[in-house]
Length: 387
Picture 1 (tube, helix red, strand yellow):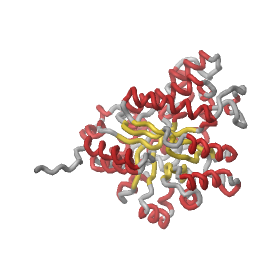
Picture 2 (cartoon, rainbow, N blue to C red; picture 1 turned 90 degrees about the vertical axis):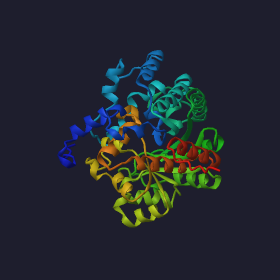
Picture 3 (spheres, rainbow, N blue to C red; picture 1 turned 60 degrees about the horizontal axis):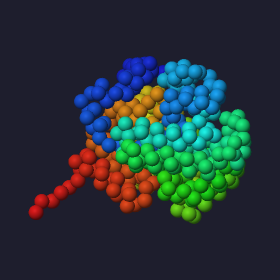
Picture 4 (tube, rainbow, N blue to C red; picture 1 turned 135 degrees about the vertical axis):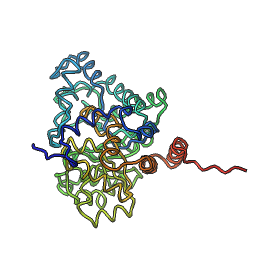
């Protein structure tokens, strides 16, 4: 699809190249120092964060045919830096998921490596989300990615991911939790997802999510609604992908029907001023992903017109996140640098956003308060009184 030029006379290609150059904070301007402070990340997909080397390794070990045999060739196929549609983006997963899905060692390893990756980015608390069914090859219908039936159930997947996250926490000294995803096109999986959330509640699992095609109406099938009703009943935290490419009505549905406590993306909320004002007053948290929103065509390609700029102006409760760093070839610094260069993001806003992200995390209250205090210490925001 064609894309108009950016604001201030900068074409898309210039912005694209700048964003990737800015992957190194050392190339940022004088504001870069605060990017080295601890960060909180709330919206990142585990299955969009695998190391390409790990994908190649397990494909060769398991004799699974991939569309490429080297990291460089694989990245040319599964990652990109010019906007595609959300549907085209989602098609990328089929190229590499078969290498990891259905293998115990691989599933545990990608979870461990995910924590390592985030620790290197200066993230001190992260919530990784994923669909247990997409990594299973037993007791799942249909079996994803054209796999042969095996012996790894969605329950096994959650246990393996938990093991990898816990071992990563110990090795890299950060806190990692997980969110289990329902998929809009597979409502029959959703009740099992909420049962897994209940079984592993606070054993890394802290919440339930609903991801996928926003054009699929909830009322067409009760599976998702029933799962979220059970989540509410059992005290399971709730987030929903909504208003990424879909209209404000999807956000309204997420809040009113599914009782979402956070909104994944939520950019198009601002198109409904009444709803937006209502959510501002409720301090609803928006999990924003600027670089992702450019590459999936979710927002105007001019970053100076991005909804995050409105969120900044209105002191909204939001966070900055990577979404799918494997496919977008990014780190968390790409999103912070975009916000700083094109959205008026400042050092004070950096502190506010991360404190708010910590407060909006799905940690138990005691751990949440500890996280907030840890950030305040790092940001020199702790008030001390001398005697």
